[in-house]
Image (cartoon, rainbow, N blue to C red; front, side, top):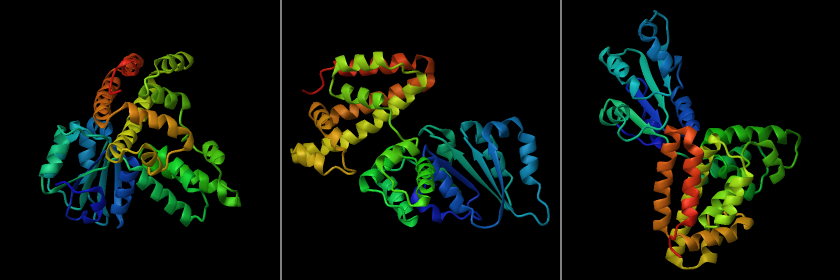
Length: 330
């Protein structure tokens, strides 16, 4: 049975014995698990591999119950379809005083584990998608207000914008800011960039911006000046996809109002003044249809990179140069 991430309060661990949380938003998943476990439970944490390698020990450990033992919660981390048979075996055993929480990363629609949890009315299935910038900005504002820390709205947006949609990353960085502000120090943009790990790789940002305005000469210079490695390619694709989603929203606004200055000035969160001109160029260059096609293509590239990390440099470079050479729109 599917429920939304904001409906977690509907879950009752005494009645709902099998719960699947999946998605890339680790912070939101961990927060949801913490909110679920309010009563006194004995908690066991397992990695999927650990469980698969020692199944007999696992079953013996969780099914053995002493007279005065609390109810048990079993949390299985990084679970995939490989664990399905174990879940089926546990269900057959009619667990008494035991709840199973499965914490998976991203599960595709065709995932057997996800399908079973979605269709079985006795199971709970919850997707945790990346937080929006608006949500992260609100979480940041609430945290800082509670701690009596003063930061400008622009800097709040800066922090929220760099967290890749994950509130766990956000919370870790806010704690650094909280510690820095204990002595009443004023928090500036410079403080934030020094204190946190949220500083964007400007070479990557510049690479993407010039790709979207088709400045091939500049792209080649950036590629030659930076020794990007295989790990950088994942960051490039994620940053690129986030950028495209923002531009898509602005492009749709521009398509409706036909006023580029109004589109830029009314953007939420506000666009940093240094970025306004190149974003205007990107909106002029790309229609919403163009951007959606790019998102689709880049998502395919990301999957190929994950499957073949050793060829990732070639994959992302070919994509960027091809896009810079294409004749989309005007």
